[in-house]
Length: 354
Image (cartoon, rainbow, N blue to C red):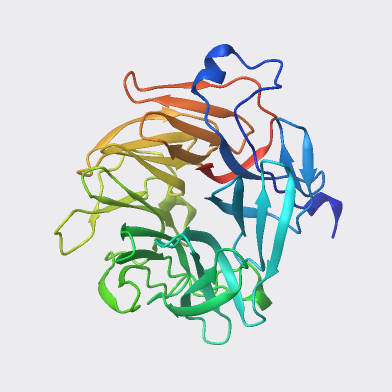
């Protein structure tokens, strides 16, 4: 692999003890955050607190925190590997390859029983989306069910152990063509609600505009599901004011496009719910976009290349592909950059360690 394109993956473990420039205020409010990063200066896992690294084969995407200082790292679409790491003591515990006729779409979810992991996958022969069920300890695949669409991305429990929501992005990709999107003129994104553990389809929702790929999910305190959108228009000009958020209100029979501020540029890197507010990192628009859970738009806040977002219910943290980390205050609607972090190209997602 050309060194210029050599990918790097990191897990950031907090608190910030050991950072000379971290303020006492930062130390008081910062949780243990986990994030992948990428760059062209090598590959591995880095824990900034200890300045140690763990080698991995490529770029990661979502990270699923596990008990006892462990986490699952899912390789970025079209993913070929899963890694279980111990961020606590800087170890790569397991590295598992996807089956020869499968690839991963970058996201996973803990089963409600704690003993399994659910991953979005692709059947490379048919192009159909799948949800793979894996043993959380061994990472051995146990079974799979349809995702009821093409290109499943993020998945989330609407009712733990009973109703699974899957955002099927509608984009067909195959290993032989890499990340090239093969069906942009015939996409059919949908949100599928699946009964668990039967795997039966309970309901399915879509938008009239099929170029709006449904990708990431978050659940507000009032039960509203937020679905973050990445526009796939063939014309670049159409992306400028393309919608970034759809919502499914409790009891609703259709998706609703949320109100939209201008110049968000049609690419939602990540979404988080903070109480009854949805936050989306509009990476290409360099803004943190905000909505009430009823879909009404709030003023966006400027952030360079915003990436991952995570809330613990009290505070919100935001990463940037430009290398910074921030804390968002809902109370005064402000963003403060945190000091003392190693600057990296953070990937699209942040997680809270458990």
